[in-house]
Image 1: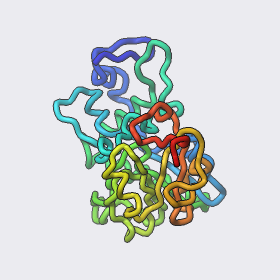
Image 2: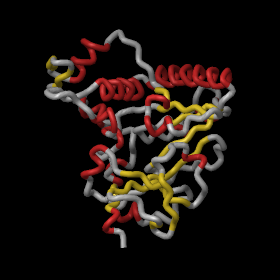
Image 3: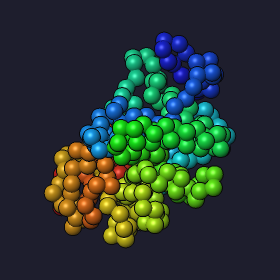
Image 4: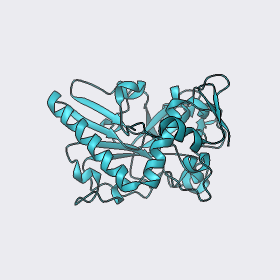
Length: 274
């Protein structure tokens, strides 16, 4: 798979990574200050960091692996991997004549690191979280982290050192995420908040709307309705701090990037709501 970046062509993504990034350090977490939506939630009392990977099996697809692995188990059922927010904002901007950008390459590197070197990845992630926590403690503010910026990994199932999971290890951090996995059981984890991401691309998936115990995030194209399926809709673009939302709410999100053109059912067309 040929790829063009910074006015140079490469025979594959692996060749590009080897020539440009082989010995360069990789950061897993990015500050919410660099994300327009996350930045809205940063206050004198809270700060946020986020981790972006490439969604679904894109890392293995781009590097032409014989077997592909996914970081989004419900991506096919919910048909969300194409209109994913991975292409929103600067992540979806490529220069004329080029096929990728630095943001996408950083996400590719992180995802391959996670898939190919899991223990080393977790070790580095813990170091970065501790660094963020230390800074927040120094500034006397609450550290908040989204680990699944553009992925859907079940972190609650991954032990870390002598802890049940990373949430147990960093109990002082408020973790939160969106998820497409309706069966995740995290209610016992006091410092982890989930919002279920809804889709009508699959009738069976859409049919469990009332059974999922979390607030529902719904992507709308054409403006936000006042109500959706009997629940009040709030503007989820005003802030990203979902753990502050009242219960029994639909978190309305405006379609961005490739999602504006989605017709799979993942994005709800507001004009079609009865």
